[in-house]
Each structure stands twice: as C-alpha cells, then as structure tokens.
Length: 79
Image (cartoon, rainbow, N blue to C red; front, side):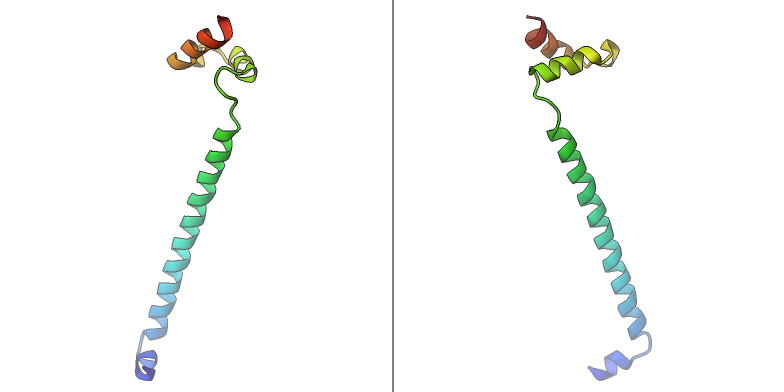
C-alpha cells in the first residue's frame, strides 16, 4: 500500500478525483437550490378559484391568459 501512495502520479490522481467530487457536489447543490426555489414559488400561488386568484387574473392582461385559465376564470369568478 505504501508503494501505491509513493507511485508517480498518485497524489495528482487523488487531487483530480477530489476536484471531480467537489464539482459534482456543487452541481448537486445548484440543482437542489433551483428545485427548492421552484417548489416555493409554485406553492405560493393562490388556489384556482379563490378570491386572490380571481383578483390576480383580473390584473393580468387578457392576452396572457391560457385557455384553461380563461375557462377557470369563467367558472369561478364570473358565474
């Protein structure tokens, strides 16, 4: 085992593996942060049909509505 550690290139191989591991952990952390942000933003949206949702839809330009949003608005806020 001692010979393997003293072999030429062994310390450099360990550094390369460490850098790869650190890079992978950074990517995992970034992905986790993005997913957490998305989940928090989606969970803050008001429930479809609620008063807050109807008010948000009234403020949103009608050209930006999707077909399902228009149908939901008609069902819950107009009728």
